Image 1 (cartoon, rainbow, N blue to C red):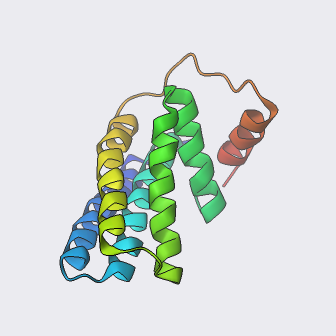
Image 2: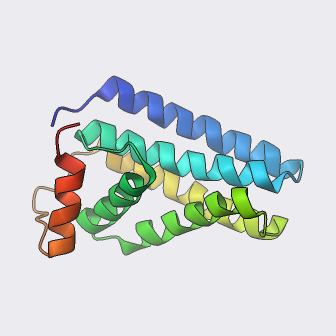
Length: 147
């Protein structure tokens, strides 16, 4: 799969914009929009990595696949767990069940995740990662099938 550095950079820039917007909304106690922008920041950062690597990333389930793939290949399950904070923010956009301090905590987890994803985006993938489980092989097929 061919990478597209220019598109990857656009997604990375959108991620930075989204997290800034999340902070602005949180200051105004607009938890719904802060949540969605926090989710957007993580999703766009994951799309940036996927685009750089030539992976499919169009759709929610593929974003989850990208997050899990990155965590697996980096040997960093914490990255996927941090992504879970972003998913909670996404749900909050629809349900509005999180208090402001909870939204702030999840946004902080996303903020910690973003530099890690930027590092992954700008470094070559680990050469020694090989999908071992059936689930990993299926995910790899979904990510690398022709777009």
